[in-house]
Length: 323
Image (cartoon, one colour):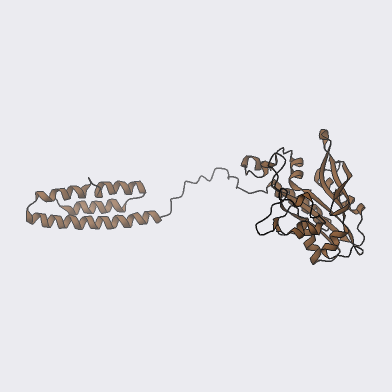
């Protein structure tokens, strides 16, 4: 008969020396596979005499069981063993660490809020899901105004809506705080526009409000002149032209002189309509103020020469790496 013990001892030594998954699989095939050493031993049993068959079969089974148990232990040990460290060459230059950066929209918001914060304006946030009172009624927008139609506003099944301007935050703040106040409200707004190079159903606005007992239209012009020159440079030319907004009176559109493109509208503004003060709980005879609103994407596109608003939302790393 074959002396099993030396072969068993060799198998245990081979098992202890294994150092990876490939070596472990090679060991399994050699000793435990269908054509392995143990299978060859088992194939010899029928050719032995009955006495030899019992003794040899018991020895082979004992050896097989022992190798299988130790194989499983070794397998688990290798699976939980930490990977060997890669070779480190200390003479190589240090790789530049990966770092994040602000999205151009977020960076533009930070810059605008920084300018107005230095002028004493606080930054205020508010809900994106609103009621018709805050989005329309409190802003003196009548029931028959086109913006209240479902073609121009996203309504929810519960009768609320996605705000179409951050002016809603101005009303909420006036309800909580008496004059004087200076605030800006940056945030996302929603309008069911067809998406193209210059329109999106979601974009960002910054609305501003200043209220006390003596604020005038001249203060509005001074604040906007300073802010726009901070954003676009001291040489930028600015134009105010009459316009209509339900929530301000008088109202203006503010334009920038932009090279060969001529005058470009950049924001809307005006003196707060007394009806807005009344809706917020203010006495119009005791206070006055101005409000303004600007689109963040439009400002970012002008400053960076971006031609398509969709680039901001596609998460294309090639675009974002430029900022």
